Length: 88
Image (cartoon, rainbow, N blue to C red):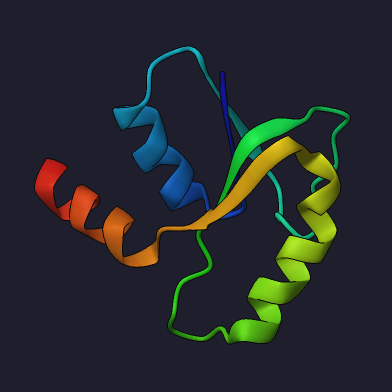
């Protein structure tokens, strides 16, 4: 199962066009998202432009409780941009 938390409706529409029905899309601010679910991976997509490492640290602190015991955070800004360009 994959859960996407996104506040921007344009990005949500882009995901809907590329994801299958097993993906859950939650429309909210990731800083405010809360769940009882645990994840193996949490991909943080704070983009380089307009954000700094304090934003990344804050996101990790908020969502650390959502990781499984051996879970990991990933930050895929540049890789994801290349994927979107390749699949556009």
